[in-house]
Image 1: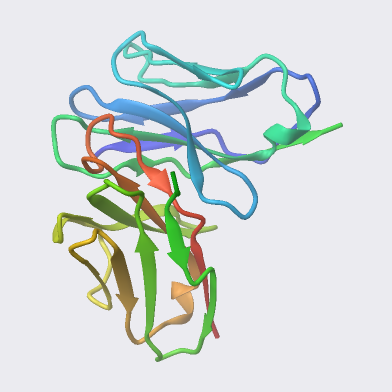
Image 2: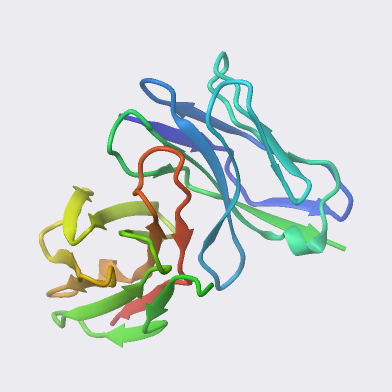
Length: 113
Length: 115
């Protein structure tokens, strides 16, 4: 079945450092790809998405590019802030079928001043 | 507009009891999905309801059930609670459902603790 693999955390960075969180997927067909963020005590919020190969999703300084050749959707940010501390989830959905979102296990990011 | 609301936010039960959690989706959204989030297993899909019909079901025992009302509000029920049911239960709503690129909007969750 479909699956998502994320790099294990926690990830601890200093403010203004560069962030990469790796995400690879296994899916039949051409899934849509998502990054969700969960701040402490809250539910998940959609951060960005991409629906086809080579699409780049971006929001709040975060970016991820849908790479079909490497089945990857890595999340990047050039300069993290303390307020970016959260858990980040990579997810996929199969637009061809009626199947639910498949999530990775999440990566906890802590940014220290 | 108002987001997804879940009640109650926190719940403490004992083994063997049953519990009902409630979710009110964003106005106009017909799909409601439920997820269980635990530190060990991450986010696991429970079920999805669309226009009062269960459209998808995850791999959970029959003790976990749900329903959706005509106003799209949804409830999930867990009977005969076990310690392992302690988790954050998240509800998400969307216009068209879980497949495709339709965005799911999540509520803040209900934190269930089973003693």
